[in-house]
Length: 84
Image: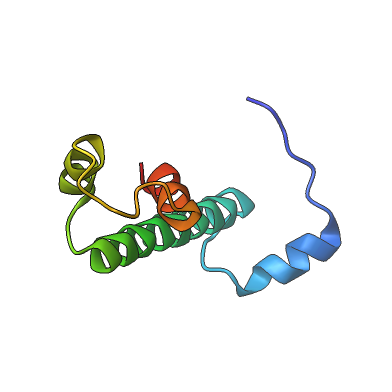
């Protein structure tokens, strides 16, 4: 296992984080960050479903069938790439 050098200034800041050891505190920080990223991605997916009024699978079927008149608009193509 690789050792991580934590500066004293960072250790002081970490005193506000729950956990008994620096490792526990770091693990809590990483998990919190990942949960926030997951929540952000989930919200973004919801925004697309709300905007286009269906889940991605149905949106893609419509895209492939070329039933959307706005398929080639910059906004729709950008959304498709991000949503995919």
